[in-house]
Image (cartoon, rainbow, N blue to C red):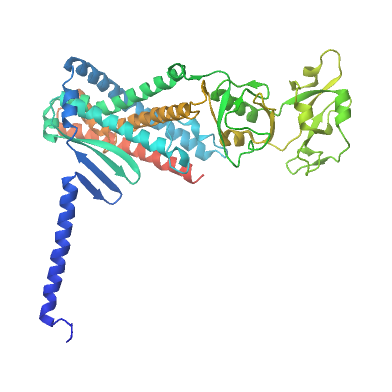
Length: 488
């Protein structure tokens, strides 16, 4: 017997299939609604009323204090709105200047930068980045929610969202109540977010500043930079290189007490010419051996065999000749030698001496790294390679069981909170469509221009033009910032 359906039976099967699909879709939507979930392309959000009681407790706590607190926030938000426009304008001019120059300055010179994970944000830092964004967003929205309850605006709920990969937070307020309160009350609510971001940034800065005192019972500082990681491809990795747990005390003649000293010394070494080392005439004659002198492609001079791993070509001058070269064993020349710039720096105890300087390729430096009690590490290469492949901490554990990474984690997280919470305050204060700055501007115009521009329609036109200009300014900064990060 055939299983083929008769023609009049087929529509019934299709109807059953359609009913089953629509029923499944309805069940799925009901499930999402029950748990406060909303999913759409590139966007997922979750909203709940679980925290409403806590928000109402905060909003009704010490009314006088909250009034003063959010009034301060209102003043800060208005100042931040004007300041953000100035800052974006300055950043845009810096970006355009860098685009038009052949050798742009480091992008770190700009106060505001577009951050692209994996491009100008290391993948290893993504946890700090996303955690700081989420915390900054939550604190921002808590400010709005508590201020709204303080101003008798109904609070419907709190939520968290993910847009593409970026997390954030939001509060759901009763719009009708917002429209019924005065413009000054609205300003307290709309400015509360950027105000709380500013306070979070200041609090993070204080923790970072006081961290040595906070961790003093467990860690001490000021004795050098503690090595916490050396990457496998680092030029400092090797038998006579740096190891986790080493304490670096100096680079060349530059003393190291903290990580900031390490970065500063490497910056100075890379910008200044190669430093020399004092060696007396007898030692120079004893160590040097005949070698062929030739010029490299960049114009620098080489006088040692390319196969040598211990010898380096040094240049020096005497009273008769200003360009003399000698191939010398680097460690014997450098260890226990005084650094110098000219022969005059080496004249001591009437012993004839010369200031010999390594003859290296452009941008390459020979750096003596002291990390007692180990033998000095001699590094040959670009100083930035040392900076990027060696991680250090200013905090040295007092006991072996203490983690060497904990202070670094706290430091790094505080720096991300300062940076991202501050950026969130600045960006949200911009008079731009769909940002806090739009509502701050509208309420500010209503509070200040009602007597000057009587017609509400005209005030709205002024606000629209300002918002259009602010949105254009922000969009230009983002677009050119992305181009600078990804295309250059």
